[in-house]
Image (cartoon, rainbow, N blue to C red; front, side, top):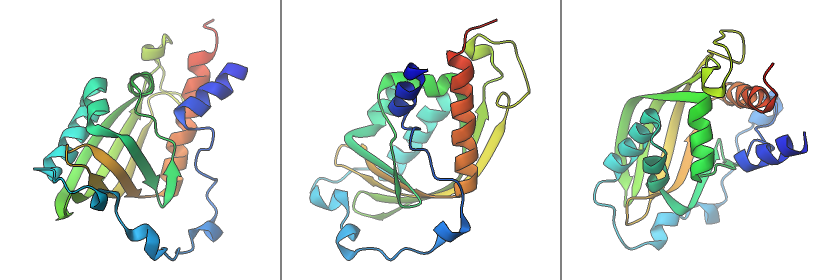
Length: 195
Protein backbone atom coordinates (compact mmCIF):
# COMPACT_ATOMS: atom_id res chain seq x y z
CA UNK A 1 0.00 0.00 0.00
CA UNK A 2 3.09 2.26 0.06
CA UNK A 3 2.58 2.85 -3.66
CA UNK A 4 -1.04 3.83 -3.07
CA UNK A 5 0.06 6.73 -0.82
CA UNK A 6 2.61 7.86 -3.38
CA UNK A 7 0.00 7.60 -6.09
CA UNK A 8 -2.47 9.71 -4.10
CA UNK A 9 0.24 12.30 -3.53
CA UNK A 10 0.92 12.38 -7.28
CA UNK A 11 -2.73 13.02 -7.93
CA UNK A 12 -2.88 15.68 -5.26
CA UNK A 13 -5.56 13.87 -3.31
CA UNK A 14 -3.47 13.08 -0.26
CA UNK A 15 -4.49 16.47 1.05
CA UNK A 16 -8.02 16.26 -0.34
CA UNK A 17 -10.46 18.82 0.94
CA UNK A 18 -11.11 18.76 4.69
CA UNK A 19 -14.27 17.10 5.94
CA UNK A 20 -17.13 19.53 5.77
CA UNK A 21 -17.47 21.51 8.96
CA UNK A 22 -19.88 24.46 9.13
CA UNK A 23 -17.38 26.28 11.37
CA UNK A 24 -14.95 26.36 8.45
CA UNK A 25 -17.45 28.30 6.34
CA UNK A 26 -16.60 31.72 7.81
CA UNK A 27 -16.03 34.45 5.25
CA UNK A 28 -12.35 35.18 4.91
CA UNK A 29 -11.03 38.71 4.64
CA UNK A 30 -8.84 38.97 1.57
CA UNK A 31 -5.36 40.31 1.95
CA UNK A 32 -5.07 43.33 -0.39
CA UNK A 33 -1.59 42.15 -1.44
CA UNK A 34 -3.17 38.95 -2.79
CA UNK A 35 -5.56 40.87 -5.00
CA UNK A 36 -2.84 41.61 -7.49
CA UNK A 37 -3.47 39.23 -10.34
CA UNK A 38 -0.84 37.03 -11.87
CA UNK A 39 -1.78 38.21 -15.36
CA UNK A 40 -1.14 41.86 -14.33
CA UNK A 41 2.56 41.00 -14.43
CA UNK A 42 2.22 40.09 -18.10
CA UNK A 43 1.86 42.93 -20.57
CA UNK A 44 0.83 40.61 -23.41
CA UNK A 45 -2.86 40.22 -24.06
CA UNK A 46 -4.66 37.01 -24.92
CA UNK A 47 -6.64 37.67 -28.10
CA UNK A 48 -9.77 35.81 -27.01
CA UNK A 49 -9.67 34.67 -23.36
CA UNK A 50 -13.32 33.56 -23.35
CA UNK A 51 -12.66 31.20 -26.26
CA UNK A 52 -9.50 29.88 -24.57
CA UNK A 53 -11.55 28.91 -21.50
CA UNK A 54 -14.29 27.33 -23.63
CA UNK A 55 -11.66 25.41 -25.62
CA UNK A 56 -10.15 24.01 -22.41
CA UNK A 57 -13.57 22.86 -21.18
CA UNK A 58 -14.24 21.24 -24.58
CA UNK A 59 -10.87 19.44 -24.37
CA UNK A 60 -11.74 18.11 -20.90
CA UNK A 61 -15.16 16.92 -22.13
CA UNK A 62 -13.53 15.17 -25.10
CA UNK A 63 -10.93 13.51 -22.87
CA UNK A 64 -8.18 14.98 -25.07
CA UNK A 65 -5.15 14.89 -22.76
CA UNK A 66 -2.76 16.74 -25.10
CA UNK A 67 -5.29 19.50 -25.68
CA UNK A 68 -5.99 19.89 -21.95
CA UNK A 69 -2.26 20.01 -21.15
CA UNK A 70 -1.71 22.69 -23.81
CA UNK A 71 -4.44 24.82 -22.20
CA UNK A 72 -2.45 25.33 -18.99
CA UNK A 73 0.65 27.48 -18.41
CA UNK A 74 3.67 25.80 -16.86
CA UNK A 75 3.07 27.83 -13.66
CA UNK A 76 -0.64 26.95 -13.47
CA UNK A 77 -2.31 27.16 -10.04
CA UNK A 78 -5.82 26.04 -9.08
CA UNK A 79 -7.90 27.13 -6.09
CA UNK A 80 -11.21 25.76 -4.84
CA UNK A 81 -12.94 28.09 -2.37
CA UNK A 82 -9.67 29.94 -1.75
CA UNK A 83 -7.74 26.75 -0.97
CA UNK A 84 -4.95 25.68 -3.30
CA UNK A 85 -5.68 22.39 -5.03
CA UNK A 86 -2.74 20.18 -5.95
CA UNK A 87 -3.86 19.71 -9.54
CA UNK A 88 -1.32 18.19 -11.89
CA UNK A 89 -1.24 18.89 -15.60
CA UNK A 90 1.09 16.05 -16.51
CA UNK A 91 -0.23 13.66 -19.17
CA UNK A 92 -0.19 10.62 -16.84
CA UNK A 93 -2.50 12.33 -14.34
CA UNK A 94 -4.83 13.64 -17.06
CA UNK A 95 -5.03 10.23 -18.76
CA UNK A 96 -5.77 8.50 -15.46
CA UNK A 97 -8.44 11.06 -14.66
CA UNK A 98 -10.10 10.29 -18.00
CA UNK A 99 -9.92 6.57 -17.18
CA UNK A 100 -11.93 7.07 -14.00
CA UNK A 101 -14.37 9.78 -15.06
CA UNK A 102 -16.21 11.56 -17.84
CA UNK A 103 -16.70 15.30 -17.53
CA UNK A 104 -19.42 17.55 -18.89
CA UNK A 105 -19.93 21.30 -18.57
CA UNK A 106 -23.17 23.21 -18.96
CA UNK A 107 -21.82 26.74 -19.26
CA UNK A 108 -24.10 29.57 -18.17
CA UNK A 109 -21.72 32.35 -19.14
CA UNK A 110 -18.11 33.17 -19.95
CA UNK A 111 -17.29 36.87 -19.92
CA UNK A 112 -14.05 38.85 -20.07
CA UNK A 113 -13.77 40.98 -16.93
CA UNK A 114 -10.36 42.55 -17.54
CA UNK A 115 -7.08 42.09 -19.34
CA UNK A 116 -6.55 38.31 -19.56
CA UNK A 117 -9.28 37.74 -16.95
CA UNK A 118 -12.50 35.76 -17.40
CA UNK A 119 -15.48 34.98 -15.19
CA UNK A 120 -17.44 31.83 -15.93
CA UNK A 121 -20.38 30.07 -14.29
CA UNK A 122 -21.19 26.48 -15.13
CA UNK A 123 -22.59 23.19 -13.93
CA UNK A 124 -19.93 20.49 -13.89
CA UNK A 125 -21.21 16.93 -14.27
CA UNK A 126 -18.79 14.12 -13.51
CA UNK A 127 -19.70 10.49 -14.17
CA UNK A 128 -17.51 7.76 -12.75
CA UNK A 129 -16.57 4.71 -14.77
CA UNK A 130 -18.77 1.62 -14.64
CA UNK A 131 -15.55 -0.31 -14.01
CA UNK A 132 -14.82 -1.47 -17.54
CA UNK A 133 -12.13 1.21 -18.07
CA UNK A 134 -10.17 -0.29 -15.16
CA UNK A 135 -10.67 -3.93 -16.18
CA UNK A 136 -13.61 -4.66 -13.88
CA UNK A 137 -17.04 -6.01 -14.64
CA UNK A 138 -19.64 -3.30 -15.25
CA UNK A 139 -21.27 -2.20 -12.01
CA UNK A 140 -23.66 0.42 -10.74
CA UNK A 141 -22.54 -0.07 -7.12
CA UNK A 142 -20.62 2.81 -5.54
CA UNK A 143 -18.08 4.09 -6.54
CA UNK A 144 -18.97 2.93 -10.05
CA UNK A 145 -21.53 4.59 -12.34
CA UNK A 146 -22.00 7.57 -10.02
CA UNK A 147 -22.95 11.06 -11.17
CA UNK A 148 -21.85 14.19 -9.36
CA UNK A 149 -23.08 17.68 -10.24
CA UNK A 150 -21.59 20.89 -8.94
CA UNK A 151 -22.51 24.49 -9.59
CA UNK A 152 -19.31 26.47 -9.96
CA UNK A 153 -18.11 30.01 -10.55
CA UNK A 154 -14.52 30.43 -11.70
CA UNK A 155 -12.36 33.50 -12.01
CA UNK A 156 -9.72 32.62 -14.58
CA UNK A 157 -6.47 34.37 -15.45
CA UNK A 158 -4.55 33.72 -18.65
CA UNK A 159 -1.19 34.74 -20.04
CA UNK A 160 -0.45 36.36 -23.41
CA UNK A 161 -0.36 32.91 -25.06
CA UNK A 162 -3.94 32.28 -23.86
CA UNK A 163 -2.74 29.61 -21.44
CA UNK A 164 -4.56 29.39 -18.12
CA UNK A 165 -2.36 30.62 -15.28
CA UNK A 166 -4.92 30.64 -12.44
CA UNK A 167 -8.26 28.83 -12.09
CA UNK A 168 -9.92 30.22 -8.98
CA UNK A 169 -13.24 28.40 -8.56
CA UNK A 170 -15.99 28.63 -6.00
CA UNK A 171 -18.44 25.81 -5.40
CA UNK A 172 -19.88 23.36 -2.93
CA UNK A 173 -17.29 21.81 -0.60
CA UNK A 174 -19.56 18.86 0.22
CA UNK A 175 -19.96 17.97 -3.47
CA UNK A 176 -16.22 18.33 -4.05
CA UNK A 177 -15.46 16.13 -1.03
CA UNK A 178 -17.85 13.44 -2.34
CA UNK A 179 -16.15 13.50 -5.75
CA UNK A 180 -12.68 13.34 -4.16
CA UNK A 181 -13.75 10.37 -2.02
CA UNK A 182 -15.16 8.53 -5.05
CA UNK A 183 -11.88 9.15 -6.91
CA UNK A 184 -9.84 7.70 -4.05
CA UNK A 185 -12.18 4.70 -3.85
CA UNK A 186 -11.89 4.10 -7.60
CA UNK A 187 -8.10 4.17 -7.30
CA UNK A 188 -8.38 1.50 -4.63
CA UNK A 189 -10.20 -0.76 -7.10
CA UNK A 190 -7.75 0.15 -9.86
CA UNK A 191 -4.74 -0.80 -7.73
CA UNK A 192 -6.31 -3.92 -6.18
CA UNK A 193 -5.62 -7.31 -7.77
CA UNK A 194 -8.36 -8.60 -10.06
CA UNK A 195 -10.11 -11.70 -8.75
